[in-house]
Length: 176
Image (cartoon, rainbow, N blue to C red; front, side):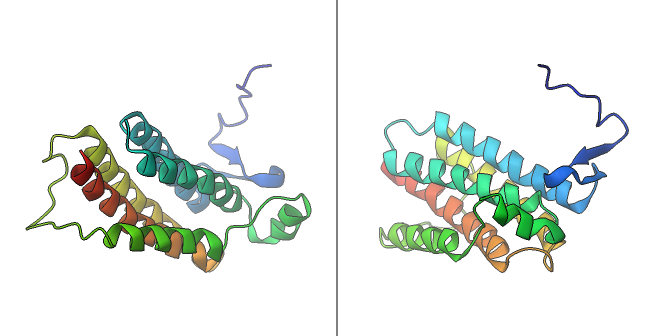
């Protein structure tokens, strides 16, 4: 079975439950940004080496994105159907985990003098985390366009995640 259907050749794509929208629909743009971020986190994983905490957090975030993207790919009028099908909803628990990790890293008293220049340490891990951070900021901006249609924890999560990624980049420099 081929993944090629040709259904998208006219500039439309599917959301959950067979809903068709333009490929430049705000939901598709937001989904694309989160997907790009998820892929960048895959690159982060390839640079983790023995930094198991960063690796574990990254994998957890990627799994959070499965839930987040499922919800982004569902129109508000289909959310009850989404839940009936047993799909997990994104919520405050995802955000609390990010906040906990931020507190842990901030407790390490990481010192940064001046501006933290991405890549200046020469480490691919911290540069990749900084790259992920800027993609995260874009994903957050794209989701703002859907603010009235999304669980508020999604925007809070993306906002805090960019802070976490910055901290993880500095932490990776400290641990190397």
